[in-house]
Length: 305
Image 1 (cartoon, rainbow, N blue to C red):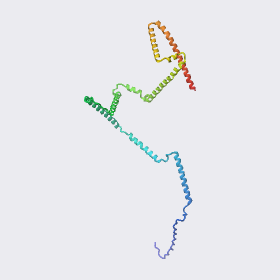
Image 2: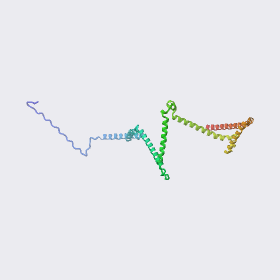
Image 3: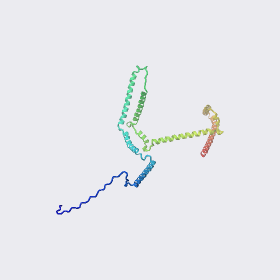
Image 4: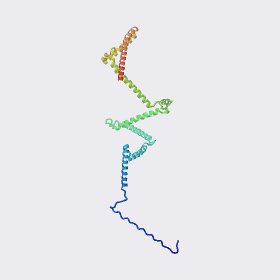
């Protein structure tokens, strides 16, 4: 908006003079730097360093692998990789394995047929090479042994298949027989049967050991009784014992024949041997009982000690 008429000039404002700071010299002291602040800062820094070092020491004492970050990461990665590798290894084709087994079986059959063919050809040429030496390598022998083994296994497999063929069976006897071995119906498993067999074997071994432990005690303790003529038995040699047994058998046979011939003589013959046998039997029983009592007394004394 324009003004008309007398216009008064406004007084000019004086410019304030700008003060120029002098350039700082090298030898002047910096008044802005606070020495106390710097000292406190350094002290706090050293204190924090000490605290961190103590914490590190405590952590390492508790767990040496506390700061093994690289190793932990490697383990985590390895754990994540291993299942994938195992999955790759475990994953096998379902039907190719069966086909490969069949191919191996056919290959072995072809090899056996080829060997038989070669054997027939050799039989034809036996007249030409009858006087010459034949050399067979170890690998060829092993191959023939493997073929024999495989043929035996195949024969057993065929026999099993024929035995288990349901179409050739006329009754359900096998079915009922297998019901006994069915665990679901209360039959015992294989492990239980094996445990029972082991327990029975242990019982038999314990019985044998008890018999062995009793037999030496009887042999040692029987001579103490004067009634039994064990001193004579010890002095007798095995040949004399055999002769004695043979003579006793002959006497027994003679007695039997005499009993069949005469009834009167049989009664007289019976009385004498019966009396001797009964007395000997009583003496032996008394000696065994005394020996057993002494053995039990010794055993009891050992247990009390």
